[in-house]
Image 1 (cartoon, rainbow, N blue to C red):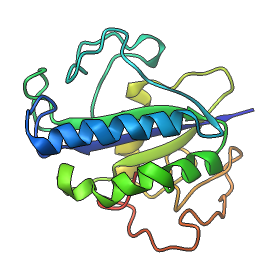
Image 2: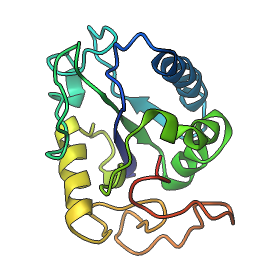
Image 3: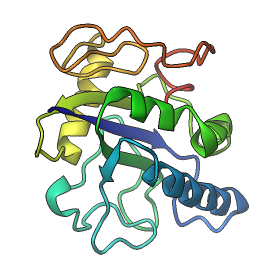
Image 4: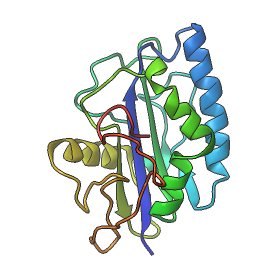
Length: 191
């Protein structure tokens, strides 16, 4: 049975190693969010670096998740001292569990604070797609799909929660906000 891959990408206002209060708060909230999402029904796994130190993304060993890469529009640093991005790559049993995890609990609370940490962007900051059972999505897959979503409308190849598709390519027809208006797809209101 196909599984859902979810890639998120955002450019931070400050480098990951910034000692300021907002960066510490981002890490603290992020740790709590990951803890909750990791226990959410339908969650399978997420990319973790085997040798990851805080701020080390480029050049880390990501194992089966592949070499770390970012969208072409990322223009900030790539060293531990200058990297200013937050990104995730995760695998889910289905669309609904991923959507529920993103728009509920601590992650929903973090979304309300995203403007404190992230720069605004005209680019989408997340993308979903289906992978075959047993396959592991790679960072390059996520970047390719996110850039495709930016250049084209959502399609079975690269889609959003608001404009999602089933594994066979038909529109999913789900209400991602649970009846609440979560805003536009690009920039401010994506996971």
